Image (cartoon, rainbow, N blue to C red; front, top):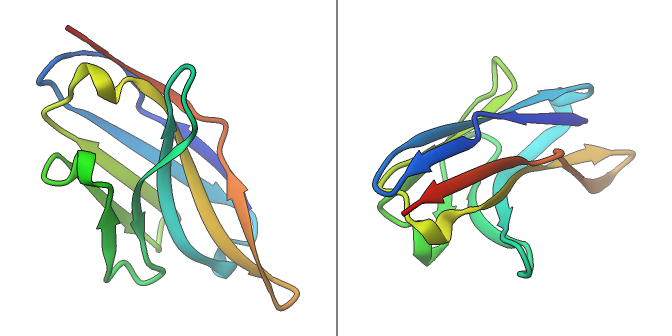
Length: 119
């Protein structure tokens, strides 16, 4: 499974951005999906996840109420709507999926998209 993120950019504090992740390849095998982020000098951290059917979502405490994760299995895409952005949201955001192959569960990552929130 290959992933390509888009939608990053520069935004002012309090603004909004919508990130998208497009999957290709053996997309029928995709299970859960998620967004992670990594700020300079920090470890990569989980932002939000969504189950295969899209029925269950989870969020890190620091984005609850501000970010919304969604997916469209017909289009093999996943989005992250980000609102009320803060300078500390500045990071490279990565799309990640779990997919089944040969009876095992594997992970695949996108290349990342930069989000910069200016004060």
